[in-house]
Image (cartoon, rainbow, N blue to C red; front, side):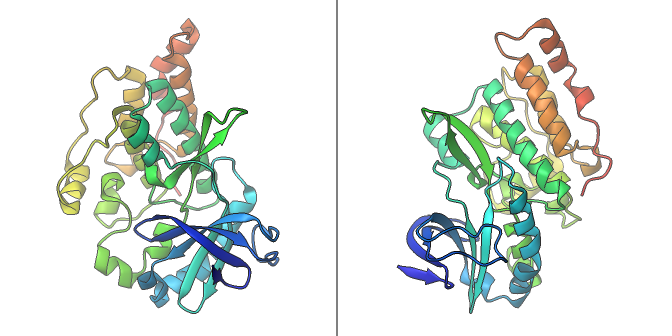
Length: 312
């Protein structure tokens, strides 16, 4: 068992990603007052160890220290759809985030194992993701790398069948967006989910998360993102220049939501809070048992998606 700082131990790896490896770990002793969650000895946690090239980049280390208070403050607010970052560890050339351990697969794995969601289920699940984004945006935190692999599914209910989406890796993209790193990788994020303004290196506001939520919603109902295949550069060009094709059989209200999220101009996209409200109206209005008022509200969903007047 490998120690991480003085308060945590690594047990076994859970998965690897572009920015590091996530381990199942446990706490050796209570964390100090600087942590968002003090925890207790023996408690299971998830620990993300950032890649060595990130930990060795002084710009990333400075960002890590600078972002600490923002990420921990977001965790102290404890939104039910956000995985809490409990503590941040800086030790030599090791950078680690200690998070709550979520018992469930990520959304990418769930899609692979079970196939697409129904339009109603996709709308209601994405509404919860939009709520989490809205809470983060209200605190001045933009995710910048929203994708199914960064959405964990907690099992709720007595039988564990209800899946509650929980966003993880908040702040990782921003931490990695240091000059030495971006020169090597050209942009921060995943090509299939990158907003046009990110692809062009323009300012990245909360609108980039709304764009990614539209891509994710499209993928939930079809099993694949709208732009795929080819090199990363080709994908970025498609985000800049192409319009997604409407999936066959998709209800009109849900397609309206996707179109508004995927507008090329970020100033025309709705806020995450408006997106959550709109998706609930759609979910309630396109189901088999929807009443006339619910169906009417879903058909008028465009009115619930005005441009965000002040993207963060």
